[in-house]
Image (cartoon, rainbow, N blue to C red; front, side, top):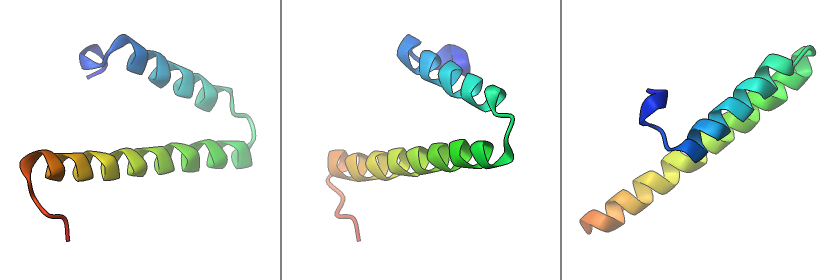
Length: 60
């Protein structure tokens, strides 16, 4: 899957992977995981919104 990502996205994945790998404290790992979860959900929301807009679909 990573091969299909743009170079900038591959860089972001690697940066986040390194942040996860460098966590030695459980609370730090939780913070990183929650940050990534929020970013993922924000991305999903924008994808849904712009996809609906591109298709001319009214979102409920």
